[in-house]
Length: 368
Image (cartoon, rainbow, N blue to C red; front, side, top):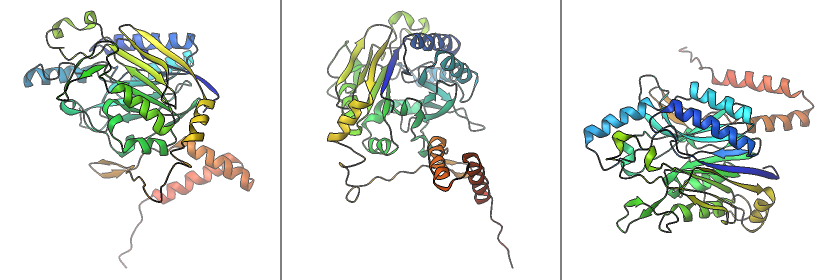
């Protein structure tokens, strides 16, 4: 991780069900973040361009009709929207993590995924994370991610990962993210709410202390010794489409974006009730201090007693498919080997690529 990084949470209202105008607002926000000197900007869950705030308030028929509208306002990865975002990130010199409704890239499928898109400030789409388990009635609208979606990404400011909403309550995911080397964590949410005694939720008053986002992001930061950039939806009443005002009774989007350091201390406390970019400067020294006390992947681990096991493959109609290769880690390892053996890095890389190609070819079995 770099010695000093400016991070930001984009608490900006999207244009509901309108991916074209949401894209315009996204690019304008990235440009503004660039002027503010932000190195890494995190947008909320499904910022493109809808969250089902009508959950529990509509008939099955109406729910299906609204799901179709979610499909129409969803984006593909890659696609024209991701290209435009990548260009905006390059021009503003800002790394971005953006929540989207993603259309499945499997032929024949129109399933949607609740996805985080990771874009570097040199204009590359580094990858995605699909929410592994949609929460409660969210399962009506989104499919589930798989082993390929547990990843972190090497940005120029450090290694960045992200989880979506209630994934932060899946305790087995935290040590996996730590093992993947996460240094800065993007936590994204549909707003801020008040938890009721029967475990339901309602729109929270700004600053309500009964929302579990607050303990979740602070504990995540402590357990993994990471900085957490927490980005929450903000959608004022006048931004709700006219034909949805009677059913958007579950609108939790009051904001609540915040930034936490590896000791679980707020660097920027939750902000409510307005559009803004919540920012803070973070330093590698703060993380080193936290690691000196408690290093989950080092001196405070006991993998001889308790370990973790996760599947990295995804499954398709043709069988398992491996996770995307982590090019950043490969590059670092190849560079070290090239120095050790006095080989030009490009020659070593070409040799490894050729060898992997041979190993991946089908093996012919003779019948003789």
